[in-house]
Every structure is written in structure tokens, then in C-alpha cells.
Amino acid sequence: MPENDTASGTAGDPAGGESGAVEAPEQGSSSPPVLRRTLTFRDLIVYGLLFIAPMAPVGIFGTLQAKSHGAITLVYLVATVAMAFTAYSYAQMVRVAPQAGSVYTYARVGLGEGAGFIAGWMAMLDYLLIPAVAYLFSGIAMHALVPEVHQWVWTALAVVVTTLLNLWGVRTAAVVGFAVLAMEIAVLAVFVVAAVAELVAHGAQRGWAAPLTGEGSFSMTAVLAAVSVAVLSYLGFDAIAAFAEEARGAHGPAAGAGQRGADRVARAVITCLVVAGVLFAVQTYLAALLAPMSAAELAAKPGTQGEAFYATVDASVGGWLHDLVAASKALGAAFAALAGQAAAGRLLFAMARDRRLPGAMAKVDVGSGVPRRALLGAAVVTLVAAVWAARRADGLDHLSSIVNVGALTAFALLHASVIGWFRVRRRAEMPSVLRHVVVPVVGLAVVVAVIVEASRTAQLVGAVWLAVGLG
Image (cartoon, rainbow, N blue to C red):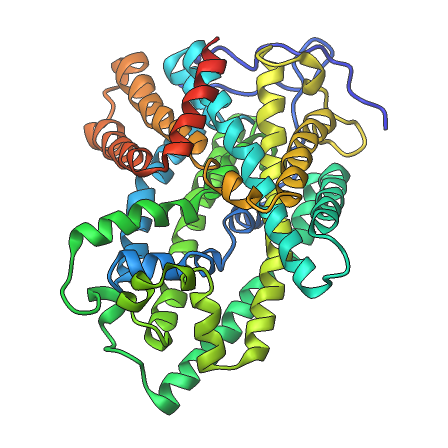
């Protein structure tokens, strides 16, 4: 396909203009390249929920049950509130800089060029490796269904198919993603109906309040320890901000166009978090009531934790729902990776446009309107990581232990950016102490607490990646 040959450059004055917002420039012969405004509010929600996955708690249900002493639904309610501070900071900053690049752009305008690069660099680690984990999940599930084909082949095939969809165009990928998301939610609805029917017919395995109060004595320490793991289920809602430049009305010569698009993205970020929180709370509440093993038994037998949700479905409903959930997770994982790869491409594009990465990745394809080279660059890295992990017995453990620290570090810089922009750079406009100081400070405290609780491997990899970025 032919490509836009516009030279890359900076995407706007980091200090902002009189309006207090940093606008993406219009496409032109002497302007940096920009992306097409094609995404609706529904499309933004689709990308966010695809990346999160409606049934994200399935894989860590047993772990959280054991860690929280049975109060898993309370864990997800607290985690939703905890991540709401980050979502609100995103909503604040997307109105300041409605451009591709997400937290990279926000740190750049709020804290300066150096902090912006580090935010983008740390987010890059997350956006490149989370899709690799999702592709690997898809390959493992497909290998279980068709064991004659090695899982690395299925993994590579998932990368190729979703990359082609992303290259086809952001709107096309959103339409296909919507169909997959609808399927995932339908499967979740089947589980909810079947679980309610089982509860009505045979009752619960434990008290109706147990998923909120725990089994036996309540422990807030145990709940907070589990929250530090549960918040990782929400990573992905932030990817919506990466599409800010492609939301309809995100920028343009008409007065107020940028604000309308930014408001749409801000609402999508918060809506996605709330919807995910509700879905997570409902499914974990029902599963906890029906689980054949108590939280104490799961804690005593760590090897049973990974399959705890599936064991619950088998014991209470039947094997047919087990297979349906497994198939849904296989397809859903591949399309979660699609959303992650698309967000990674926008991040690389934005950094290249600002000359923080090779300028070749700042080209926009004329036919599809997507940053094709940036997408292909992200796909290659993800493919190598996913196939490498798929060919190793311990590959999943290695990848899953390091994928979160990059995003968490970027979140920390996001909260600092809110303070930097509204309290330092825009002091004359009398910013709100609650919105522009209290909220980001609390959000920063939550993120730091989760980083402290992360695995030593994740902390080490994050430190090394940060050191390379600083270098």
C-alpha cells in the first residue's frame, strides 16, 4: 500500500496553548502525520473490554480465593475503586492532550520531555509483552483442543491473523472485535444463568455473604494483599486512551472538536472500568458460592488454584460449560492481544512522531489509515516473545511474571503528570485540590503499593528496562 511520506516531528507544544490543551496537528504537507478519526464510543469500549477480557478472573480465581480467605468479590470491588483513581487521571489528561501515545503524551506535557520518554518506554514493555502472554494463552487452549498441532504453531497463527486485522484498519478490527466481545459476554451470561439455576435448585456451598465477608474470620490484610493481585486484571482499560487521536471529533479545525473527542475517550475509559468491575464482581460472587473447595483447602493445595474456576463449573453445572468457557477464553485471548497490539502500535507511532524512536514508524498508511510500520514492529517483537515462550515448558511463568511492572510504572508517572500540569504549569487557572492533587496522590499510592507487592523477577526486569531507557 502507498504510505504518507510526511516527515515526522513534534505533535504539539508540550506546554500547551492558551486553551490549556495540546491539540494534534492536522494532516498536511508540512505537518506531522495524524491518524483518522473513525472510532465511535462503542468502538472505544470494545477495545478496552477486549484487552481486559470479560472473564479475566477465571485464571486467578483460585489464587484470589485462597489469598483473601474467601472474600474474592470484596477484593474485586475494592480493586475497582482503587483503579478508579487511575481511570480518573486518564480522563483528566486525555482532555489536555487528545493524541495517540496515551501516558507517554500525558507525561510529556505534564512533566517534560524526559519523563514523557520514560513513561512511554515503561509502557512499551507492558504493551509488547501482555499481548505475547495473551497469544500464548490462545495457543495453549487451541493445543488442548487439537493436540496434533504444537502450541507454538497455534500461537504464531493467532499473531498473524490478528495482525492482519489490525493492518486492515482500526474500524474493521473494532467491528470484528465487537463480535468476539459479544460472544465472550454471551458465554458469561450462560454461566450466570446456569449458576443461578444451580443455586436455586440446590443452594450454595457456603454462606451467601461469604464472597464479601470471607470464610471464617475476616482479614482486611488478606483482602488488601489479594487486591494487589486483582488490580492486574484491569490492565487494558487504559489502552482506550491510546486511540484518542482516532476518536471521532478528537481533533480538527472546528472549535470544540478536540474537546468533544477527548470527552468521548474520557467517558469510555471510566465506563470500561465500571463495566469490567461489575462483570468481575458478579462472576466471582456466583463462583465463590458454588466452589466445591473452600478457601482454606485452596490455600493448602496451591496446585489446585489454577483450575479452581473450571472445577467449580464442572462440579456445579457440567463439563459442557467447562468446554464452552475454555473455547471462549481461547478466542478471547487472541483478540485481547489484538487490542494490545493496536495500542502498542499507537504508542510506537506517537514516540516516533516526536523523534523519540526511529522516524520510519511515524508513517501512516494512506489506504488503511493505520501506522502500519509501528504495528508491524510491535507484532514482530510480540511474535518472537510469544513463540519463544510457547516452545519452553516454563515460558508462561517467565512472561507472566514481568508483564505488569511497566504499566504500573507508567501509571505512577500518569498521576504525577496530573499534578505537574494542573498544579505547576496551569497554576493561574486555580486547579481543584481534590481532582488535581488528592485523586492523583491516592492513585499514585495504590500503584506504588502494587509495585512493592510485585514479584522480585518483575521488579528486576522493570529496573533493568528502566536503566536501559535512562541510558
